[in-house]
Image 1 (cartoon, rainbow, N blue to C red):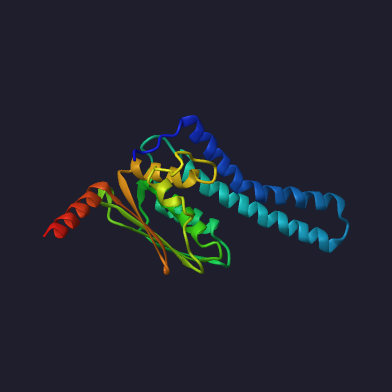
Image 2 (cartoon, rainbow, N blue to C red; image 1 turned 90 degrees about the vertical axis):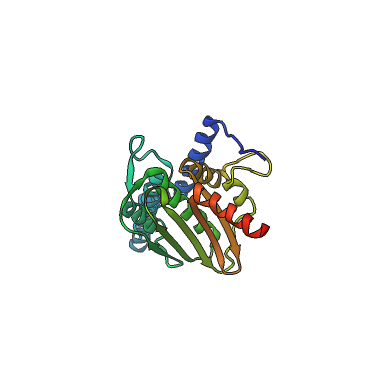
Length: 229
């Protein structure tokens, strides 16, 4: 089955829908809080509304900053991004009591598409543990030898059925909707980086590894040789 091709305008529209979906909830909460402040005279209720506005504003800001790096241009063509910035926006996005982020990577400048790949894999990992858990990010190697490993462990950790096919660029129905666009986009970014994605789901959790395509091809040839022997 060949790689599915999505029209550029459809890709842009679906990604915009995804970003809007991520920010509409906290923005709506800010509006609700402001309406309470306008109508409410009770001091306790006004304090509650202010707290809601502050928390929702922080959430909206964290999501927008994350989306800017994960989906946006973040500089001109060929630009690099500090992995420290990537870690910071990811920690802000996952700043709740349910999810712990373990970030194992040196602070370096990386090509922006590789950083986008890391961030998008983090989104997939977070979706795999809706009840919370641990997300581990490990980046090793340098330049063309860089490998990325993102895992998610937690209660009932699992990937949505369609995610592996979307990552591979081969949606089962030859169609990508707003629910699947982020996983599909992640696959596009991986291929733009010249990296192959390997997905492993087990009772222990979900692991997605990104390795250079040349290394992945060499590994496959070695396995075939061992099997033949």
